[in-house]
Image (cartoon, rainbow over all chains, first blue to last red; front, side, top):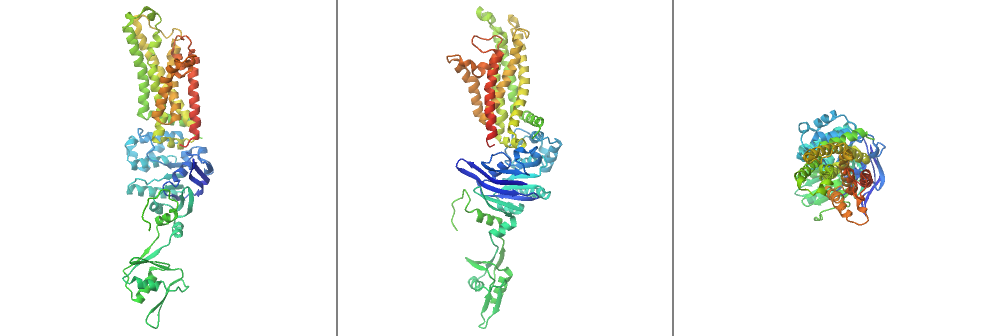
Length: 326
Length: 254
């Protein structure tokens, strides 16, 4: 378990991390999300004792990193996969780390097998591709069979196969009961990997919740409706609500239709299609059928983590490209 | 806390597993031996043309150890490489993740450097001395290890070169960039000492290698520090630099 308490890092007048408090629990993958420059890497470096907090503290199972007895046996971390001496072989790289933490040399073969680098163990790291370096970084993180794992942007620059491999590995590690803390600015990746999310922007905590709850709270699902008579349909669907939870459709005396949409529903017109919230696709279909309106499209659009994240971090992105405002 | 034995082993693995450090170590020994042999051979060849007063004051030991001047630079470069290589590649972060007590890392690097450089350079110095004396033998001016001060000068050369390596490590840990650290080391052991010697007041004898090289002399020159006093002063320069490096290494973000 990782616990940060009012963690703060200032570089001169710039505040990189601002009174950040959070807990990373074991047994699940915790995603650490934020736009570029939000302070994710700085936070991770403070967790690992590489950077000193200006204020506040961070503990791993109750101890600051610098006081861990054999740190690699407790915590494994992948920061920058290319931050290795290219002149060293993969095996020697792992050997010097193992020796410093009194990890038996036999473990080196095991982790090289785990990441699929056994065949290139004797080759110099300088000639490794980014994918291979990433695997070596993970081998180094796994060297001490640690309970806590930190990965900083682990899928950066990886091919789809490598991304799938890392995702599966992280899920497996969490299922084994370990603490897995992974930073990313790729929301789609986190949506598929993380059980829990810690979202920061400009060094401040924006959200700390389960991935599902985060999506639900941040944006709603809607039904996209396409029809040649969309204006008529919109008029029917946006009639006075009934106060019931389901739509009510009644034919009225003058052969017109009385529709009472459920409370809280809304219809927005977006060009040639409608965006309906608060009603199911089935309900919309019933209304259209009763009114004799043809439907060309009825699609349930689930919110994405990406949309939720953009919504939340819109105000806190440090570097945004100038674009057309929608 | 990591075990110190493990940290030492790890640092030894790092040093031996990179070609640049092993080549620099080899270059230190080669410069030492080649420098002494070349100058001894030149002296032997021109012996008959030497002015009698020069021949009378000729010091066969110091000629055979002449390579130490160049070897000191190579040893210092090795010291710089041992630490700047980690900062250049970013490996230092992985190192500090494995061993978060940074002073233990610096101490282990210093210990491994001391043992390897001392072993290699004490051997090279002895080879250099013996080769030089063999080359000078036809002139009859050769020295032997039993002569006063000679054994101390020969082994002291190993100590001097080892201290120079540690000087490089300290400057490298302080400056963190290889190029900047090498320039600083050249300044401290090649440029500053002769300039300081030209200053009035005799302060020049306390400046880095002006003091440190006394341990390699069999005869103490007029106004110079004694062999051990001089070496002690050189070590003090290194100690001050190393302490500054240690304090900053502990305080700075990696």
